[in-house]
Length: 79
Image (cartoon, rainbow, N blue to C red; front, top):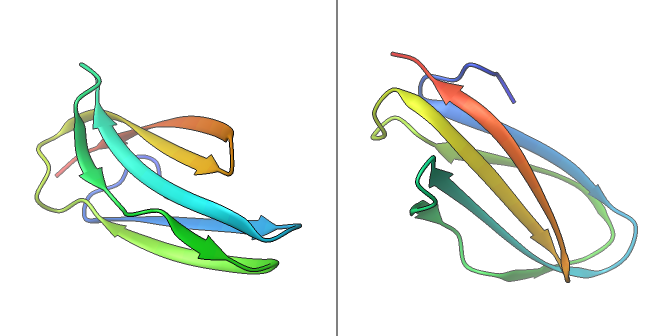
């Protein structure tokens, strides 16, 4: 995804097995500002666009949960 971002964060990922996926964006205080529901996805490559245009400038964390494995990535929004 672009870092810094302004309107959209582009997320690409590849699943090696079927999995339950959830994606969220939190501000630096830990408050979730965007939450996507958990969905079941099959093996394969995926591309998801997350609209962040309504969020103010600042630092955020993108959290991706694949089954029980959690990954955090920091990104910045500039306008």
